[in-house]
Every structure is written in C-alpha cells, then in structure tokens.
Length: 204
Image (cartoon, rainbow, N blue to C red; front, side, top):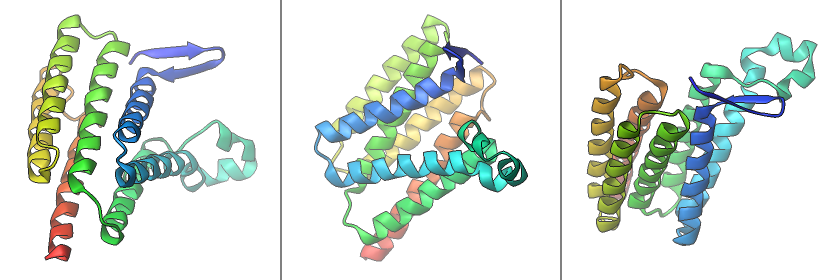
C-alpha cells in the first residue's frame, strides 16, 4: 500500500482517493442543482465519517476512558468502517421512505463516486499506466451512459451492476477480488437495489 506524508501526518493513498471522490461527487451534485440528492449525499458522507471515527469509543472503550484525547488520533478501524457503511445504508432507507427522491440520481452519484475513486486510486497508487488508462476509459464510458440514461433509474441500476461486474474482472486479474473497495461497491450496490425494490413496493 502506498503512503503519503504531510508534516508529521502519514496516511494511505486510499484516503486521497476517497476524499477526492467525496469532494468531486459533491461538487457535481451542487453544480447540477440536484438539491435532494446533494442533501442525501452530504448527510451520508457525514454519517459515515462520524460513525467510522467515533466508533473507536465502542471498540476501544478502555483506551478512550484511560486517555480521552486518543479519540482525536484513532478511529474505529475495519469494524468502524463497516459500521459506518451500515449506518449510511440505514439512513438512506429512511431518507427514501420519508422524502420524494429521484432514485436515478442516487445511483448516478454512487456511480460517479466509484469512477472518481478508481481513477484517482490508480494514479496515487502508482499503478501501471495501462491500468490507469483502462480505468479512465471505462469510467468515461460509464459516465456517458449514465448521462444518456439519467432519467431512467432502471438503466442507472443496470449500468451500475455492469460497471461493478467489469471492475470485479479487473480486480480479479490483480488478485484483489475480495479487496475492501470492491466488497464495498458490491454491498452498496446490493443495498441500493433492495432499497429501490422496497421503495417501489411502497409507491405501489
């Protein structure tokens, strides 16, 4: 894993990829004036980060009690990460249940997030130019398809599933099929699919 250092702070390259994906996707929603989707997205990001960060209290309670300031330097680790993902999914369910939302925009936002993450990750991790170019081309095609079908949520869903399937092939070629990013993509894709089904049943 590639690491970067700023002053006394060291952090993995994946952080750069995640932050870039968060910010660019948020800017996209703001520029496109997708108010409801931007509101949901901002809350999801906040809930995920806060849950991941402060879940250290839950998983390392004795350490926090003995040294409260350690909460500033530690997070919930892998357990906290998945707890944050779960919290974001639960929030999305209630948001969709109590608000009139454009479902296709939710999927489109997640698609853009994955595309940005994959491209930036390939770059900051110093992957071979071939892999970077492949991710860039695939990402551009996915975004173009998403824009062409942005008013048809069923198409957005199919594009998302196809895209993650292609990524699974790419990850498998580098022996990373069970990696954290791909596992996250699959779980959230399944969750969104189930939430869409529930939403349709509620509407019907």
